[in-house]
Length: 251
Ligand code: ATP
Image (cartoon, rainbow, N blue to C red; front, side, top):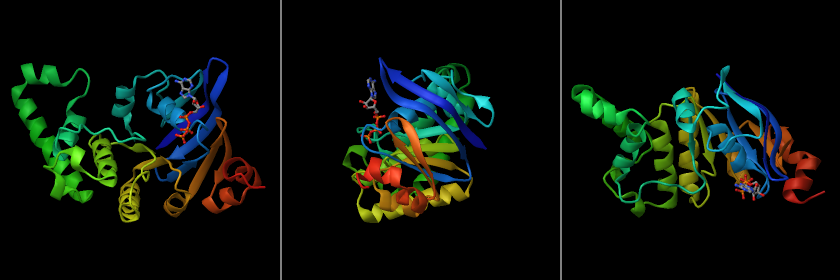
């Protein structure tokens, strides 16, 4: 499958946060995205997942035009994402956090609960089975009954990933999965991402930790002032003079 961004732009008044970004991202790949603060990375993510509308351009997943679809329909089409600052429900347990991610689909659950009690029970059994499998995969089973507020920063990032996985996505956008995470958990999160990718899930990952990102991805895109100014292997991109000037402040 391919996620295609075609001349995607977003302006706020006269300010161009994202300027004509075109990218083709395969679900075979883990693609990194770097760029200075304010380069437009998170804005680009929100144009892809539908939390914001583009001023112009389009987003499609394997030919299906997502551009005018609301976020929940994009999620149904196979797109999942995590936020820069993890947003688990603090007063729910880790397991409950995963369950609500699958349950709260607009238009679904109320009808199911009122008119299809048996289907609801089957659905509940099925999502609990899936949630437990995902927690095991993420090495989080031992904290499944813990309130999310008591987890470390890295564990919260893993819960976010778990919530995304509950949607059975084909493509996941990760916004700074390593921020505030200790090096041991960074390695663990990286391993899980690689394993998921081997199962056919594509990733686009915004990250400021260039070292960890370089080890994880074979392709890296650089955003600066809303434009894609670099695209290639981490070694190529990081050696590029334009990128070094823009991002690393070197000449
Ligand atoms: P960081 O690495 O710090 O997270 P970023 O590359 O993700 O930065 P964005 O958060 O996408 O950058 O912001 C890009 C630019 O767009 C910034 O200058 C920001 O102030 C501006 N911007 C983002 N959202 C809005 C908005 N709703 N209204 C006005 N300007 C905005």
